[in-house]
Length: 109
Image: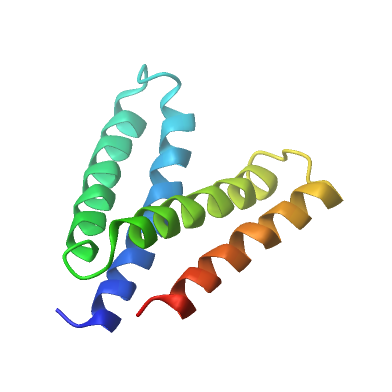
């Protein structure tokens, strides 16, 4: 697998991370069957893709980027879908996370 392919897989894994986190919210503590199954399936795919990316990329970069994408995505979903408040400080810290993800990508050898 090429480095570029590993990065694409990692980004997809990160997107699936905040998708399963959203499903977790809808599962209401795994008390709703449909959202619970959706959460478990997307979680499994996300972890599998993360593991594939780690065949090529270092663990420190892979895991950090995966959680960063998930964190940023979860805040965006929380703000847009669940109407959670978004403050200037949240935006600044999200920008710092995004900057960290990009920094790791560009310094990865």
